[in-house]
Picture (tube, rainbow, N blue to C red):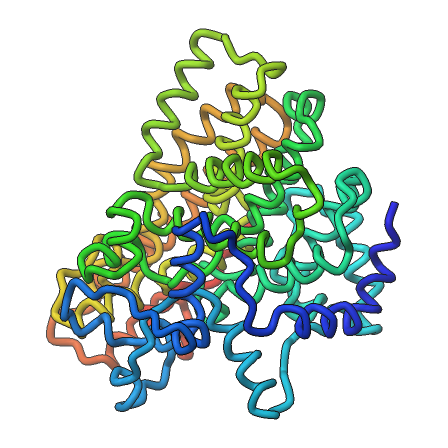
Length: 476
């Protein structure tokens, strides 16, 4: 097995080679026009060199807003005037630009400070535990949880040696994947990707899958989990469609974000040449299967996958020796991993709930600002974290995990269902507390009186505002 921990301590040499090797390069095959189109849209340097400008089908003001400013607390008056019409690879473009301008590059790739090495190693020894705290692990790895976790799992399965993956190329690939997640997104960021990857690992260790999955299945499952939301802009598909964004046009309003995540991942695989040593047909097939897994995370197709899964279980005709059936189960596992937050212990689940709701509300604020119809769940006035989460659990999470438990009736499945039930009860209790406080306050009560009423309700004079969500006391 590769001495991967030593690789972490020699990361700067690997990174240096990677940065020098990729500056300004396009490594797509000319025959793959969609991938080339994405890469050209994604790199301002390329556009400026070849004179490429994407066709614009709308004059909606949102098209003149840089995605980098979507979730910024500070809004510059000049920001909307900047004509940057792309999502892909901004972080990497910025890093390269700093190099070209002679500004010292500040890439956060100091993976493990010596003080944290022991703690991070200890956590990775328990990476298969369902209560794995990805937020703590991200802090221990200095914000590089996705790189460290994915590298560890690939190596733990022996995939690095089995597929003869070049260490420099693999490292560059993982670095670029993490960079292409938008750290400004409250929810759809690299920590979410790391959390999904850890959950996917837990599912693939379940007896029904562990004894049947091939090394190829495991490799694709881990890569799909790590890249499933790659370059997510922090807004949903309906938003891109109603603003006539170029990605919506490119993918014909169908699985817009998922197609973009997939093509972005393919772009990084080709740019780094991670699979370049494999036969061309094998590499293309792996890219297609990777896409099939990522496209399965489209929440708008939830009922299609769930109905198919339920039918298989009813007819008891899943055959794990069948490659297509194993692939379908990987799709279902990734779907579960993607929305497993309600199934985590309360203190982890609550943090994710608040983060995803913050991202929803930020999109709603943008829609209000530009006189657009506010998307469902995105209006901070009409919704709360609690009611959004209870609805999500009832109509999306519970049906999916109930069927997963039918397929894999294990301790993990029962633990997840137990956590979800307790978390749902916790949110219900918080909602009732907030409702009670609101009902005690007369309509003419001022903001100060609201705080006083909440304080009296809590039995102290320094109580929190009724708009705050108190810290959960129900430990799952």
